[in-house]
Amino acid sequence: MMKIEGTTTEHGNRDVLLRIAEALERLAPPVRPSGLEEIAEGYLWLPGETRLKPVSHISRIDIELLKRVDSQRETLLDNTRRFARGEPANNALLWGARGAGKSSLVKAVHAAINQERPKEHTPVALVEIQREDIGTLPELLALLEGERKRRFILFCDDLSFDAGDPAYKSLKTVLDGGIAGRPENVIFYATSNRRHILARDMIENEQATALNPGEAVEEKVSLSDRFGLWLGFHNIDQDGYLDMVLGYAEHLRLPIEAEELKRRALEWAMQRGSSSGRTAWQFIQSLPAKPSKPENARLN
Image 1 (tube, rainbow, N blue to C red):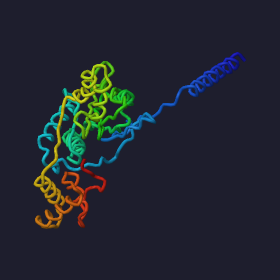
Image 2: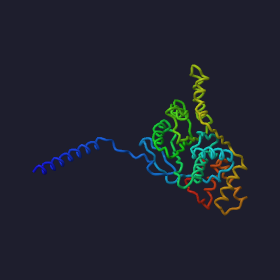
Image 3: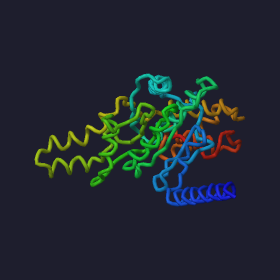
Image 4: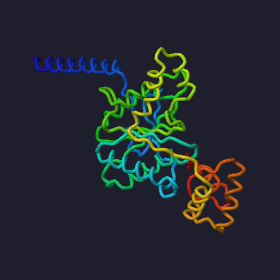
């Protein structure tokens, strides 16, 4: 009889413990996936959900197709290669003319570095953050810092700040690398049409309203100085534009004579009032024999 009572008591204790465990599970907040559970070469930062969205295919063009940016290409390749190896590397600002290939170079370099890596190594990830989400950088960095064995390139395309926008302060803190700054497994690349990232009227407004105009302007302009690597992109001439067109056509093996290709390319540029790298790629996409690259690939 005593044995039966003991067994009953044991079962009773187990039931109580089970109920307590279930109650604690209900009280505990659910574990939210970060998106990093899926190993991918690219991610999109979704600040509203505090997670990353894996990207199965990154829209980009081959690095060999980028013409007239040899110096910028080699410099960014070397910097990114050192970062991928765990060596010291700089945050980079690619600034200059629209359509000159700034964001295309970032994505092409990222692809080239991953092609070089040993197959057993986890790929370097490209994480895109929108300009309007720069203020959420601390949350994103906290997420990436937990992935110490992986390396991430944060990428913001067309970065700029207008008057009254305080988000530049968040970026400044990250670039400074203070006690809450950039983790060692993260680097920041940005493109901008403005050399100092800030709008001219924003700088002029600081000069007009500040008690010490010189110091106020220096505080704003110094944001771009916090990028250790500056790469300038400038407008190309007609020969450079045609060189790009011929390079694309040769790579894609388009069945069209060189002189005819040049003539049509110049007409296309004249109609658009631009002869940038982006214009060259758009022209190639317009030809009857469509290129074999994804339609959403673009040169920025």
